[in-house]
Image 1 (cartoon, one colour):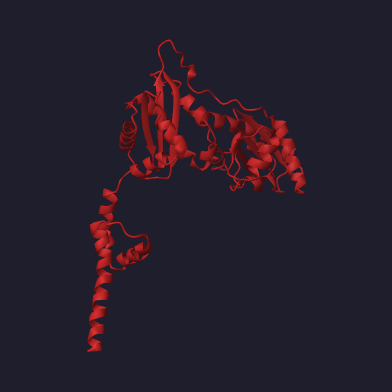
Image 2: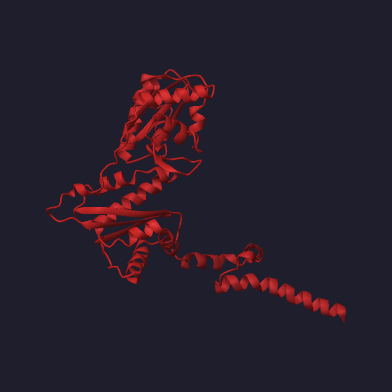
Length: 339
């Protein structure tokens, strides 16, 4: 009798194990966190995921700009603020900013947002004034993106701007950008669009001096300035200014993608390997997480670059590099190294 009870018990336990993942997947009920891995694994073993997974993906909440816009408008109404007009010219600005963030996502914290927005709005048919923006990287659904915005007090304050008149939302993959602005009166000059940030001047020579002092402190041989590397550094600064910010070394990689078609100054350079460090003067210390405007070359070398986890510190302390040159413009710095 006891054996029969055990057989019946095991039968129902087995049935429960089989039906549990099927229930969650078919009904799309939220799976409790503590059993989610087990349910997923069982679904795979039982081959339950093919059609169900396809349906789940197709019915999931996608990241759609118009949906986020609707949520923002409803959010403003809920707190007694007027809804804003969706403006096509402002949408172009938002889309260009979303595209720039997507292309340069690794340097998101260092991107010159005000400079980019000013350049994008320069040729707008609508005279845009007092442009503000919020952005988030990561969420791939409208609901999660909106929740990220309203979960941040600083971004919420921008979303509830009572002086804004128009709004635009743009997305690119997992990047969402919301811009708000006023329409400038005809007699109000468009120059009120945010201007380029003015930084304390740091000379190229000061950068080389600070770099060598940094290497000396670590027992690494000094670097000499090479005119060919200076020409290439100037070329890369032009790339960054045209791009509107740090490009994540995309231009550098493009220049060296075909070793048979290198830039002329690099072909003339007698050394071996070439390296590059990039920085925006409004940088972020990767050790402390603090963002700040570097006022000296030492701050850029010993705080911005030294704290980087992306190879900048290693380049500065590479004993194989013997030459260097720095060029900068609009707060964008290019440091080129050469063996």
